[in-house]
Amino acid sequence: MADASPSTTVLLAYDGSDTSGRAIERAAAVLGGGPAVVLTVYEPTASIAGYDPLAGVSEGVGRVGGLEREMDDIGAQVAQRTADRGAELAREHGFEPTARTAAGKVWRAIVDVADELDASLVVIGTRGHTGIQAMMIGSVANGVVHHSDRPVLVIPPAS
Image (cartoon, rainbow, N blue to C red; front, side, top):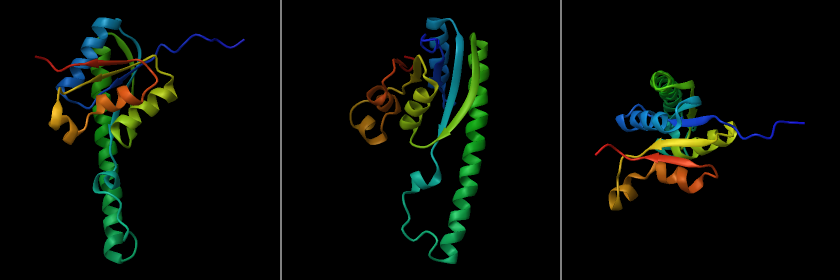
């Protein structure tokens, strides 16, 4: 018979900011550590720049496509270094972390990886934007809370 116990892996969203580092510290204080995946998400160039209907039509546009791939490779490398730093921070606070990266819309990638891992909890920091500022900038924490079927621990910014 298969083990029906829920996963105990915590997903720690980490973008290298002080707020995400504080989220790891506060989560450790509340949870006492344990297995964790530190996730850093980066957005591919095409998702930032938008769809280009002329992609591949001319030689010049083809060169832009090569630049996009190069920029995405750099983004993936930076994300991995960031995730590694987050894993070290998590280790210092009692977690048993694995560093991981994902590409895509940030809140969606966090939700998808949490589902893939069958994470018991998602931990995310928030920058504390409200009102029009939050609407204009968007809120990763808001997206995760509203689209995840898993418990989400949102850590507010330091006051």
